[in-house]
Image (cartoon, rainbow, N blue to C red):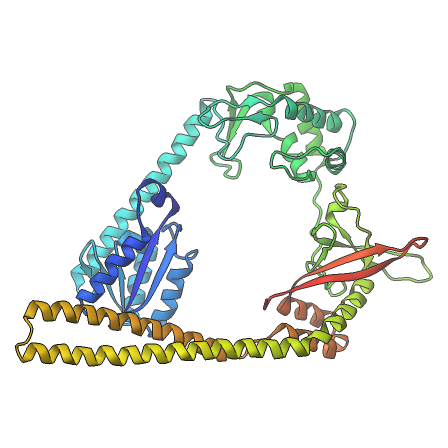
Length: 493
């Protein structure tokens, strides 16, 4: 019976309870040999929680193989390795039933071929989910109690302006950072500077954030609205039903009067800025990036004069607004022309690329075929050896215990060889499938780009291109620059 071995262990379990995914795998393989089954594949989800199945790649591959009829039996170490969710457990059991796939759990001795086995699985799943929800609820209650007592729940690092050493419950003021916190509030409340303007000023002076990165408007906004700076603690910002603010045990950095004035100002200054979504005209939005700093380029529109009419679409680096990058803006038409020139340059390489790629593919196919021949020959030898062992036993040349031991080893060898052959044949099939190469994309672009509408051009980029890196190099004595595409990242690379 073609059996799928599934193993899982979360990061927390590895660290605290010593679960070993390799030990699970070894135990299950031994059980397969005893039951005289064959292993179709081993599916491992390492360092992943069992609360759902949507974010586990291995279990989803196994489900695909079950639906395709390649797997007829699933073996796990324990039920909670498969899932901790009752809903997911019921879904999986129904799936096994629908596709005539058996299920076995080593530790619980469960077999879904029986009604009692199916009932037992559901009961275990209910208790597993109950325990998980209990742990989550106890953790939430603990964090909430801690916050109400005035302690910060900062798990990764304290707020900018504070430090909290490992094992320390109360955060302490970082005087160097605290000076910048006071300056940020002063610039916003007393000097009337915008969030972006404050971020630009800090970046120009080379003052990093807590995470040693650049400031932006969002970072400044978080500082200005953080009640930590008046000695308070806040809890559950993203869940309004549980959200509260209370007095903390740490020292304040600014006065409540200054903080409250900042909150009044930020409420007055709030405005909804619609997101610039790609349109037919700015079809390159989301694909073009700055070659100088790696930041994304944002589209904007300008009208040069009434005589020319119509808006000109240009792209500028987002990091330019916060003084992190000094790249020149560039018009969409120049980017498109630079893209044509880039593909013409790389097209000279595509012929040799195709030849080299085909040679590499041929070597891979040849290597796989050679391995298939080796394992096929080994399989034949194992079959021959099994017949010899059976003949020795029936003729009385070996004892029954010796026969069982030898047969067990040969069956294990056969399972291993069969599993390797399946992998190799699958790999060979994948190699033989036609794939769109970088050279194909380049050729298609050169032949068809100018025939496409703007909507079709965006679809082309969506299908084949990840990022286009652009730089507009200044030309001395001229207001215009020399636009160059330095690199294009493709999806098939």
